Structures are given as structure tokens and as C-alpha cells.
Amino acid sequence: MEIITYSSKLVKPSTPTPAIHRFHKISFTDELAPTINVPLILYYPPPAKGVNNQFENICDHLKVSISKTLSDFYPLAGRYIRKLSLIDCNDQGIRYVQGKANVRLSEILEPETGLESNIVNNFLPCEIGEADEVDDPMLSVKVTTFECGGLAIGMCFPHRLSDMGTMCNFINNWATRSKGEYESEKYSPIFNSTLYFPQRGLPELDLRVPRSSAGVKNKARRFLFKGDAIKDMRKKVGYDGNGSRKPSKVQLVVALLWKALVRIDEANNGQSKASFLIQPVGLRDKIVPQLPTNSFGNYWGLAASKLGHGEGDKMGFQDFFKILCNSVKKTAKDCAKILTHGEEGYEVIINPYLESNKNIDDNEVNFYLFTCWCKFSFYEADFGYGKPIWSSTGSFPVQNLVIMLDDHKGDGVEAWVHLDEKRMKELEQDSDIKAYAL
Image 1 (cartoon, rainbow, N blue to C red):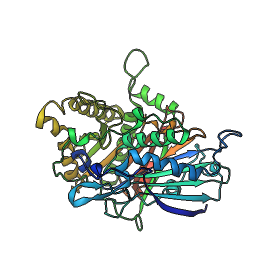
Image 2: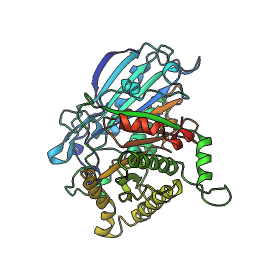
Image 3: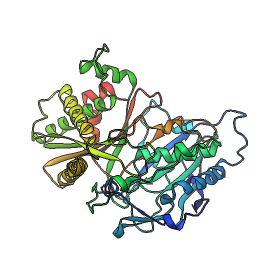
Image 4: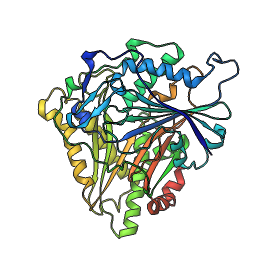
């Protein structure tokens, strides 16, 4: 496959940002976010004949509509001043790249096969690497067209400013503007993060992300857990479908992968190391009072699950699942008091971050980050020619990271696992993984 980039330019907001909004302070939840670009790619099949053929050049049309969207999301068109922890909203613009691929979309998106995860990085506008330098655009977008008429829209958002909720609100704003159905009350961002979470000068979460992926030897692979496999896992933890709450498909997949990773560690070392596993938990709907879904910034805390040396060696799948569920439930419950319990409430967010940074540095602890992008709205993003047929993240230059997304049907999970090559081969041969994953 070859992708020819034929245009790369900076796109500015269609309306200049008022001087009163020139500087955007980040919140303390933004301070704690990793220094990294977060990739998301949406894949669109060729539009049906006669559908929205008024767009002579969809790439140019998308460029015009994103310029209008940037007038609402003006911090994304600025530049981050790291030493001051603020965005200079100078309208310098986002990076907007256009490219052509010499293949058909169907040639690379065969859902039942083991897609090489590094292929999708070709549809991203920049490398997935350390961000936040003064010259880094706060958002980069790449639109790639295929020979069949389909296209991929690849985006790299700065985690310094946005979580997946903010990303989806941006995409919805852009898509509805492109389609001519924009609703300002629904999709305009609300800049209220510093009102609830004023800066505290806290350290950012250090995931050891390199600036470039050159020389990085980790392996990334997509494991597909289809709906039937999720049903079987639910039965394995004792769910019979009658009355009790349905076990989360995400926690089932996390438990299965965590168990396999502990088993691999035990096989290689005679006894598994201690494990520290974190999962981001969204705050907007858990804080009391709840925050609007279009609140701009990072609104998530961390649920931490722990195992001591050798503790997981004798544990079964149900045991891992129970530990994870209890951790997430406790974090979600504690989040309700963030705004009502003063410093004690803020510690619900701060303490897991500080503990995470400590465990990342501990050679006697296996640190894992599992993040879930399920149930977000990007599968509804219609820019005027239909909804995406698939969505993906990219291949990160880090290890011990798992990103989970809904499959296209919505009842399954795609887990993008990042490990070193040796453990990836061992994970692929794990009996539970072979039983449930494609």
C-alpha cells in the first residue's frame, strides 16, 4: 500500500478568537494527563449512488467545515505554553493533511482477519508520540481517499486538552456542520474545567512515550472479542441472564487479558511480579451535580486494581473479574463526593495518579493501563455521506497498554494490545485468548 500526501497546511478558525479568550488555562485534571497525542481513525465506505453528490471535493468540504468548528473549539487552534500551563489561543491553526491511497478500503479492513495494527498509522496525520512542545499543533487531521471512493479520517488530539468525551463532542460538531445540521446548544463546548478543578501544579502522568517511534520494538495487535464470546465469558462468571445485572463486557475482557498476562509472567519467572492496573473512569456523569456532556477538557479519574507478588498465580478468571469490578465501582462511588468534600474529594482523583507514577518507576511491579473507548458516539459521525463502517486507534510506541473499542455491531470488543514481541507471541498462544478472541 502506498499513500501519497498531496496537501498539508494549517487551518485556522473561520472567525478570529476574541482577545478576551486569548489565554486558556488548563485544569488540574488536564495537568495530570499524559504528554501524548491520542489517535482516532474513522473509516467510511464509498457513498451510495446519488447520495450527497453535491460535494465535488469532500476533502475541501471537510476543511471548510472544520474551520467553522474551530471557532467554537478555539484552544485547539492555539499552542501550549508548557511552563505556564496554558494555551495561547493565537489561531495559529491545526494541521490538515490530505492523501490518496492506491488500494481499496475493503483490501485493508477485513474484520475477520488479523489486521496488522501498524498499517492504520498510515492514516494518521502525525506520529503517536510525546507532544506538548510549543510548535506542536493542538490537533492534527488527515483525510485519506481510497480508490473505491471510501475514505479515512484520522485525527490526533492532544491529551493535554481533551479526553474522549471532548473528542467526540468536537467530531459531532464538525460532522453536523459538514452535513448542515449543526445545533449550537448541543455541540458547542463549555469551558468550565478550571471552575471545578483549578490548577495545582501537579506532575503529569508519565507513560514514557518517546517523541518518535523510530527504533521502538514493541508489538501492537488487535484482538477481536465478538458478541458470542462475550456471552460465553458472562456465563463463565455465573451470569444466567435472569434478573441480575449484566456483567460489563469491558471488565470481562480486561479480566481475561490481565489473567493471561499474569500467567505469562509466572511462566517466565517462576512467580509473577506484583501487578498494578489502572483504568480511566469518566467523571461527567458521576460528579454531583453532574456536568454537561459537552464540558471541554479532561474529566476522568483512575480506578486502580492491585495484586501482590505471586498473588495472581492461583487465581481464576472470576477472581480477576471481581477485583476489577470492585475497583471501578468504588471509584465511581467516590467520584460523587469530588465537588462536595473539599480536599478529601479532590484526593479521589489525585491519589491514584501519584500512586500510578510511583508504580511506573518500580521495576518490581508490572504496570498496565487499560483504557475504554466503548459507548462513545464516533460511530454516529455522519459528515453527509453516511456513518463510519469501522473505527480504530493506532499503534502506540509503548508497552503494557490496552485500548478497547466497540466492534461495529456494538456487542463485541476490539482490544488493541501493546506489548514487547516475546510476550505478544505468548499472549497469542494463551489458551483463554485462543478460546475467546479472533
